[in-house]
Every structure is written in C-alpha cells, then in structure tokens.
Image (cartoon, rainbow, N blue to C red; front, top):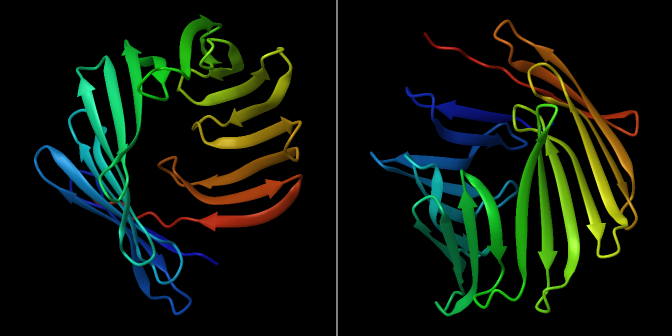
Length: 242
C-alpha cells in the first residue's frame, strides 16, 4: 500500500506532499515556498533514496512557469528550461544543457487563451497549427502537425466537455487512418469514471473507476479497474478546517 499526505496553507494553496515509507515514516515528496508573486516548488523521487529531481519557479498571478531545472541521482544539474512570454500571446521555451549550451527552442502562440501555433525548433521547420470549433456545448480542438517540407504527417482531434475535461482524442496519420483513439467518461463531479484506448501500435485497454464521496462531494475511496478486473484502490482522508 502507498500512503500519501497533502498539506495546504491558510489560503488553501498546496504547501507540501509526503510519501510514507515501509516503516510508515513520512518522506517529503514535494515542497512549496511562496513569495508575494511566485512559488518555488521542489519535486523529489517517489522511491529511495528520495532524491531531488527538479525545481520549478512559477508566477502566481499568471499561473505559469518561469524556470525549471532537472537533477540526476547524484544531485548534479541536468537540463534547465527558461520560459519567456510576450504578454499572453506568445511563450518561448528555451532548454539548456548542464554546460549552459542551448539545446532547443520551442515557440507557442496563443489567441484568447488557446494555443494556435507551436514551432519545435528556432527555424520553425517542424510545427503544429491548432483550430477550434464548438458543437453541442463541446469544444473541438484540431491540431495538424507539419514537417520541414510543410507536409502534414499527423493530426490530433480532441473533444472537451463544458468543464474542459477530455472526452475523446483521435490521432490520424498523413493518410487519414487512425493511429489510436481515446475516449473518456466522467461522473457529475467531473471525476474520471472510464477510459478506453484503441491503438494499432499499443495494447488496447479499458479502464474505469468507482468512487465513494463524503458530504462535501470529495471522493474518499477510488477503486481502479483494468479490463473489468480490480487492480488497486485509493483511500483519502480529508481534514477540513473552519
């Protein structure tokens, strides 16, 4: 069994996450440090020796990352990522190696809070374009991916419900044939109750969850099934403060 504890501050913001080892000793897994404008987050491994894996600096007002750095098992710095923004219309993600040499630059463009373009290199040789439409209260996102010859090699169509949860994801190749297709179902609390994957390259599966809820509408028990067989369950103990 895996035991996890989440802690929150007086503003209901996450402050720490703990895992418990086989001796029921709490081990820090995630730590949050807040300033007036940012939060600094440290992520630790979920298995011994529970070493530091990455650090993230996030802007609280905009809710977006500013900086991210990764570490190996010896605590040495690996890649780091710097995020720069041009208002709300563009994000540039620059990745540096441990020796500070530039590895890659990814540029994303946005309109009305939605991504509309993504270039995977500085020259824009490999890029994606996104369009949106609505049907029966659902949002449909159509992403087309292009190579350096501006030939479309992949297309992904995602349908979201009114709460922004993914209802289906379909991946198509350049001939229009399906690579894989996901479909999801949710309960009235928008918790995932079922997921189905159909794929040519991966094993097909069906997964569904069963929940028990407390009086506040938060789940306190979840049983996870794969291919109609129960695999594991999760219990949550939630303490509420006035």
